[in-house]
Image (cartoon, rainbow, N blue to C red; front, side, top):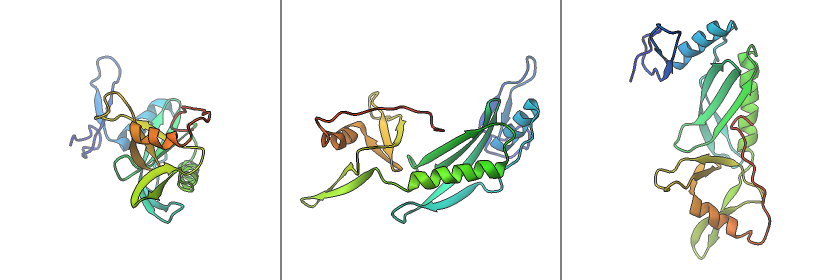
Length: 186
């Protein structure tokens, strides 16, 4: 673990290139946000909470960590589930928006995202297999180390190999589809 150049605490992950002749800074998230806010001439309001729990539509509890980033084009908030390939939600808003407003917007997005399941388990002959719950799927595309260039599809906070996802789609053979790729803050 690398110590932050500013607060001297561990967990510094951000390398910030400063002006010519000034050494690069290695910062933790909080110090990075403070430096960026100062550089941009805006106020920075740290979130009062760094994590939360929320139930999905089936009553399962999901634990999320919140990450806040100040950039020249606005403030980003991310909620990432505390498990590999879990749920991930993000929002973006203008500089100067209050932390409370940002947090409320993020919580609403998480609540909406957890309110529906796109894949369900179907029991056939004593074997459970994933199937599409409807005619729409929302998720994200991730890198698959074992996929030989083929992505991993993360839906409902669970990873699916491209072949597994294809089998779920095969039940809709003969139908048309619409594919829309969008930014993670949409």
